[in-house]
Length: 572
Image 1 (cartoon, rainbow, N blue to C red):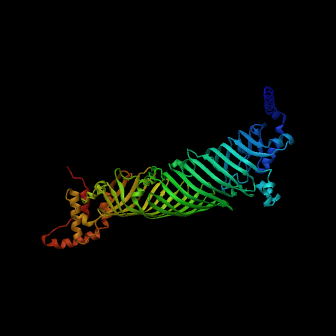
Image 2 (tube, rainbow, N blue to C red):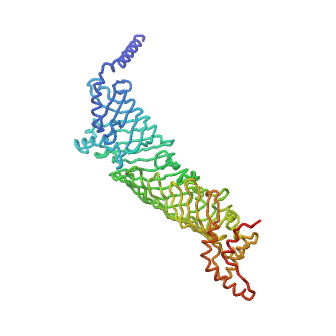
Image 3 (spheres, rainbow, N blue to C red):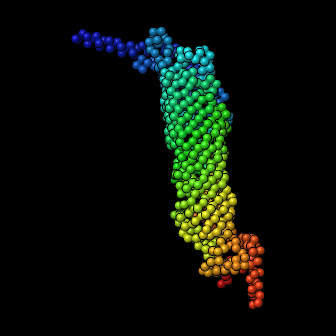
């Protein structure tokens, strides 16, 4: 029994010695030129590896460094560098016949630089194409696996990588960490499974799982791919899709599929945009936007279309469609958005994203919103323009009469604690620098009509020039609580009795912010400009009154003087 044990120990010792000594007896560095040559031919790029060492336990060759050259049209710097490279090999052919059969490749901590030029062509487009073309010429399709045995790899892994993405004409770069790629049965002319995972800038995850191949012989970027795609917590401001310097951003979650074949990539699925911010003067939206989308993208032309898609904010829905183009410095879009009868209540929490902050305590509790909008321009400087309308709305806890006291005091009109809106329409243009509104019309049953135009800049400052046409039936019922109210209201009442039924027109300005608007009457405009347009009406009314007063030798006052005198300070 003791002799058997000694034999086992001796054999074990011999095996350990062989494992430790044999790697030094095999000159594995002689395979370095072969590895570099095969890899360079397969990728169509210059490949360099450091000194090789052999591990019998793992059955692999290891290299200290790895470098893969870039397409010289893009950069003289390496396309990929790595601290170490492990190449799995079949040991028996290597030991006894010095034949190198590669079973797997593992690249540790690679750093990859992806660049695209102004035409939208990427520096990885030429990877592997020449080899795939050469192998396709050598063997018919049915013999492809045997023909490319020297180029096939059972398992390819990239671990803990970093990817830098940018354009050749810009110094701006985005970085993606923790890149991990796994592919099995990799071949240049057959399909193989692949999975990709990476950390996104400023948090978030990217995952792709599907099948790729065979490698396109002309452009690697056109290689067929069918995969599931998942993106979580993608911060748009850190990717260059939106202009972070203007305070724009949002967080994207996406769940969809990607199918690329024949140079056309189709995507479909669902995307959620949270904390959207579309103007610098706004603040992140309190409600997410979801889009059920579908796109078609022509990889050769770097352009695509957005198929009819549905955008939702709560229960409010809008329809999208259009086109986009990725060629050039930035992706540009031309999208049409059409919305009908969206519940205004569901949209309230999204308004801060476009710089509209409701007055403190106020809430949009009723009404429907319709819009016909165009979304155009580069994605980092989007412009939204078109027409919007709010109908049968109710802004609770907002007393417009008290806010416009400097205007409504002229007539004594009171609007109450809630503002009712029969109709509010405007042509709008929303850009990173702010909001511009033209042809603004609001029909308010408690007050009258408001018309005008103005802007809200990137800091949310309002500059609107407006005209309020106060209803004549309300002005004639003005309370005599002040000289201005009684005098102007009474005068208008007398004039209205003489045939002027359109009501009092009062020009004013809106300043401050949307959260705290300031209504300032344009006294000069009221006394001079706007009232002149009523002189004909006033003249007709005064003529009627003059006939009835002729017998009593009445001397009616000049209507213009009567109005302007209301705004003169009384002498002490």
